[in-house]
Image (cartoon, rainbow, N blue to C red; front, side, top):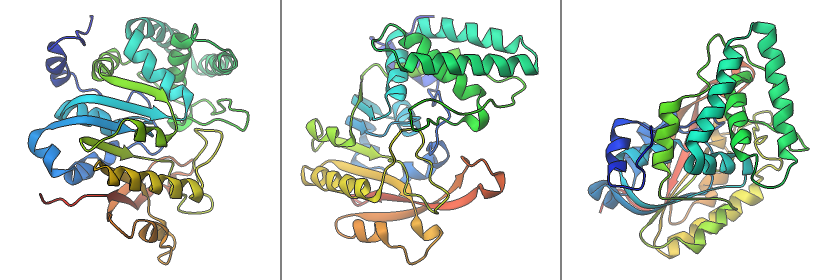
Amino acid sequence: MKVPISSPLRGAYLAKHEARPFLKWAGGKGQLINQIKEFLPPEFVKTKRIEKYFEPFVGGGAVFFWLSRHYQIKKVYLYDVNPEIIIAYQTIRDSVHKLVKVLKGLESEYLSLHKLERENFYYSRREEYNALLSKKGSNGFIRRTALVIFLNKTCFNGLFRVNSKGLFNVPSGRYENPTICDTENLLAVHAALECAEIECRDFAHCLKEADDQSLVYFDPPYRPISKTASFTGYIKNGFADEEQIRLKGVCDKLTQIGAKVILSNSDPKNIDPNDHFFDDLFKHNYEIKRLAATRMINCNAERRGTIKEILVRNYALKD
């Protein structure tokens, strides 16, 4: 089925087909949507329209996909410094039907195998994917995206993690009957991305296009809540406090031009009640709300559980 993304039928298609994140992503916001939506700018809530929406750390895109179902968004800007996630979004936007064909082939072959054969197949595809990472050019992007989705759906705990050399290194998972090619969702994602500018960019790039009609949602790599809790392996370099401070500077510039800003992060007070890093950083011109969240990305199941996260905004909830 061809999706009529370049016609008025796009809205009707999205109303019937709910676009959801196509990858499991560390720090994904699916579980917090019901809380985040209560803190959206009142003027956007009233009109159900957003002129410009920016998500400079798009990741799994849960917030964007929710907004695309409930708001009319004229222009979307999705950025990330992880080239693999950007390539995946671009491929779904531009070549979804070719992608589905390749992904269905991987799914069919994987599901036809027995347990040990599946494991061998997984590691062969992981090796193929890492080999593609070293190649330049866009000729292999459809296959590369299909492998990203396949590995994400069949690897241990659904992680996306690379080593110091930038190679995907997550071991095989154990799933009885995983859905590897969710065709309906991929087509819905394809439709949702019609008006999206998708680029591998630093978060500060949003300053080039944002204005007083913009909503900017920042979901950066979280500040670790403990010495062992850091999960920054989806990019080769981490996101230190210096970057958190630089991000706050970008928030200040956006505030000056009248853009509406929302930012998510971990709450260091989960571990140390005297850690006032974010409270001090966003002391002036911002409001901080603490939300309950469930941390799921941890190899030790006993360390998963309810924690607090912060939601920072630069506007009041009353008109």
